Image (cartoon, rainbow, N blue to C red; front, side, top):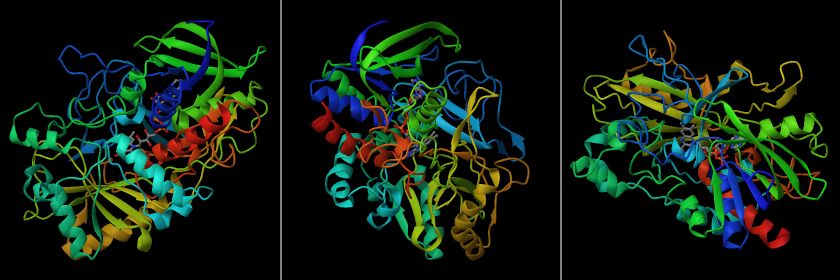
Length: 497
Ligand code: FDA
């Protein structure tokens, strides 16, 4: 309700926000969540809530009139097409020469991601979050996050026989023939459901190319896990299509929070203010930084320190495809949920997901998303001339990621006598080096905040999302974002509430 006074406002409904909401509600605190994206609980005219990858439609992209698919071309043909402008599920936000993909809607990135739920190797943790006690994380908070998220690993016996993982078995064979450690990648997908998809007894989701624009079945998003349990407490309210635009200290204590209500065309239909005792920034790395950098620059939150906006990284994401020989088909049917990885982090700085190319036809292609130890960190800053927050990433900064990914794929190509695909990201372009799925940092733990996410300079303001993590997690990030949020909220509830 406009003008209302509420104890806690959480900005955003992704991993960090959902953990905060559940734990605060369980501690008896009433929580309101504002989410700029849609609720994603109502089927469209085709009877489905979400569109699939092979036929993006109005639901697929956040306020764009043309799709911006991560794989933009195939066999020389551009894949993008016009779509109606709509508050769709995947944002392809262009900043500083990098396209930052993010989920939009109740559930944040969990709506669009591959569900790959990877805990970093313990020996790498010190570089991921240097100020955090690793024992606590690996004894308590990583296990807690994995349990709550519903993480599990594919049945290895089924993996060996399932037609939909032919591509992953080819990926394993090529990795092992070149001497690289192969690992199964855990996921939040319901593997029993996938078995039934393969058997033809339930509606298909992973086996129908559903990924990127939502899964209609099988994937346990935050809507099924943290947010469901948060709502069941009766203490959590969620307002979809509400974008937070301002936060400033209120004369009466707490913070005045300004919001814009959006229609599905993106137009502002109402502006509202509420007063919140405490505010949790959980708008994702980019969303949180865009707010904090602007609010510091325009004087709304003058106490924020000079670390705001700094330490942003792309988790070293880079994509590539390889063209296999005719005797190594990867399968016309490919599960959209990846389950295999190649770990060359220690030796070459790259952890590569063996990813699907769910085109519905045999492509003889192997496709990979690599996470690399890219050292470059960018900064968000306010540009008064454009009236926008900008990111000073540079396109050339992807080169270290390419070099690290090549530590795996040059060797595999040499061993197999194969070549890179040059048709997936444009004409004669090998590397998908224009994007990230894993924005991290910009309000770094123990720098912009204290060691638990309390923002310096204004008491009662917290950061609890991927913005806390300084640019790289060595693997896919959401388990680490969730575990860190679990750690921080436990401390905050005990000490501040
Ligand atoms: P998250 O981005 O989840 O949530 C932020 C929410 O805040 C969003 O819902 C957003 O709409 C909302 N918001 C932003 N600004 C707002 C404002 N001003 N007002 C109100 N609401 C606002 N990771 C992984 O571990 N395994 C994987 O397999 C993948 N795969 C993958 C695929 C794709 C296509 C993408 C885009 C991403 C992934 N990821 C992933 C990354 C993972 O999804 C990501 O790291 C987390 O979702 C980040 O969690 P946060 O809590 O930081 O924010």
